[in-house]
Amino acid sequence: MKKKKSTQEIGFNAQTQAKNYLIQQGLTFITQNYTCKRGEIDIIMKDNQQLVFVEVRYRTSFHYGSSAATIGIQKQQKIIYTAMRYLQYHQLKNVACRFDVMAMTCNKQANLEINWIKNAFYSTI
Image 1: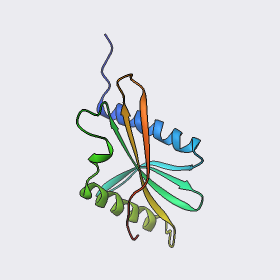
Image 2: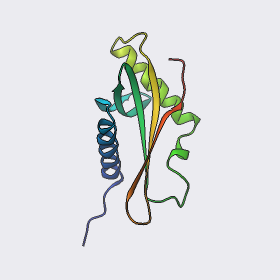
Image 3: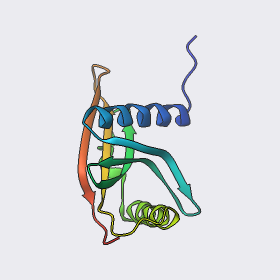
Image 4: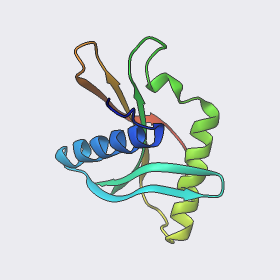
């Protein structure tokens, strides 16, 4: 009998696939699972001179809506706060930043569909 994967394993696998996809698209990997007291950023990449904070969302189906639709305003605020902490901790000033979403869903044929949403939400940081 095949052991069912935990939510953490599924999330880590989705993040790894997202990271590899972004590297294939020419972005440079910085770090994964950056955490501070109030939040976490799944992946931090660099796209030319721009820092990219990436939220990875994975759904096994579209039955309950798209994975991108699960990122509400509160989640966005947590990601923005965490990004500010990252910039402060690394003493990065006047750095161009953007917030992307990797919305991943397994379709009916068990193929992974990746929807990379650049500039999914904005902040003035």
